[in-house]
Length: 350
Ligand code: PMV
Image 1 (tube, rainbow, N blue to C red):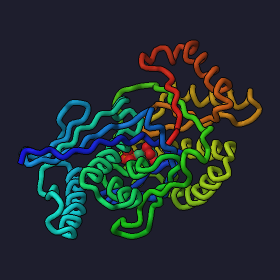
Image 2 (cartoon, protein in one colour):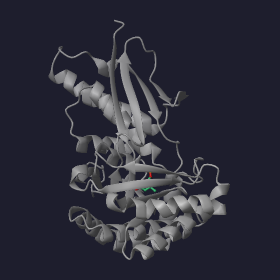
Image 3 (tube, rainbow, N blue to C red):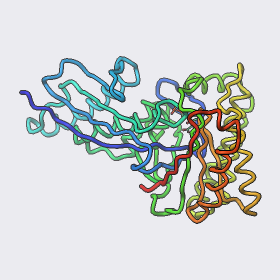
Image 4 (spheres, rainbow, N blue to C red):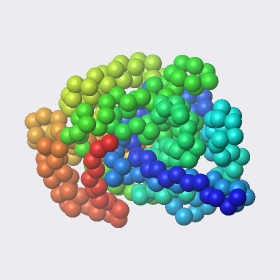
């Protein structure tokens, strides 16, 4: 009667190199374009989540970094409902032999080891970890691809955090979203030389949340139409190929071009959305300088819905890339003013 059933998992952050920006269905989180990301290491930025179920619990509860969160949001309710339905199906299949966990209240306890909502994709790792933890608690037979369809309904980008390595979120075409899922392009081991550094410009919560930002762009930007219809479909194929062929130069060009275009559509929205600041722009110029001095493309920047830069490079070029970044961090007055500025080195290793 007083047993507590538990499962603990971690889910890493993923950083998009081909951005998801725009929903064709807001309730189901169906995107207007396919996207690609690199999943960071379990040892770097991650969410650790414990899901438990017990007859002792009197309501569903969710704790994030120690504080109790509201579980009444539609997204959380959808995930709880769908996960319970999958467990119930298993209980019905194995009549009587499974504990009826689908009838018990859930307690989710989640910790991020990085700032929440600072353009560091905290929602991606958070919702991925929630789905993974409950799926493990319920011992669901669903594959990661199937679970990614659930995680997507929590936060779009969360579907990609179900996999390590290089991941595509295929937008799909069905109205019910049953083919809008994440698939692995290649595991980490395929290209283990890939590294990422995050220049944490600000650890504050972002200005415009992604959902309202995206939908403003969908409604008001003409550049956005050009992007989703003519640019992204081609870029998606080219980026996948560059990953499979381990062609850093092409991967880097596409990554930077895509970040620039995503932020251009934000600026083209009305009223305009600004995620980059002066420090972000200084980082862009610095990466351009690093590549010029190296005589080849050794570094690629990308920015999500916030001012922090993620810089991709290959392990053999670490000094070439991080040396000037560290020096600039010390010397540029604009960077010094940002009390949170620092470089966090990351590996993607699973
Ligand atoms: O999944 P959301 O709603 O947090 O949106 C993520 C949007 C970007 O991070 C800017 C791009 C992406 O593909 O992750």
